[in-house]
Length: 126
Image (cartoon, rainbow, N blue to C red):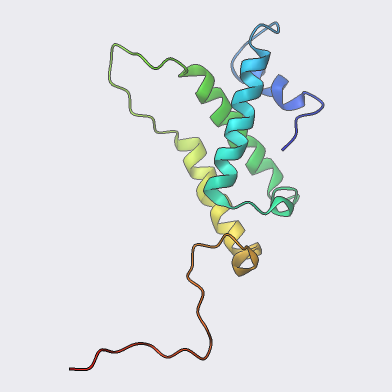
């Protein structure tokens, strides 16, 4: 997802209550990483993400994940944290279901093994 007009960047900055441009490059990187993370989790068919019923969910997940990356960007912490992003996990679950319904077996990155329609199941002899 290209953010050529900067709209997504401004929306993420709004979520984080950020003014100014000091962290814009960092946020652009987080937006790109979030975009790729979600596509890797769901599927890589680009046409799917452009559909009118998918785009709002996808953009919401990208914004939420990019904001999370920004908020928790330090590797060191005094306390133990559990990185569970319920918003992103919920949206990814919805996108996976919709992806399976709309793209299904047409996606060449399917994790289902290829099976021949003429193959017989193997049974060991006793």
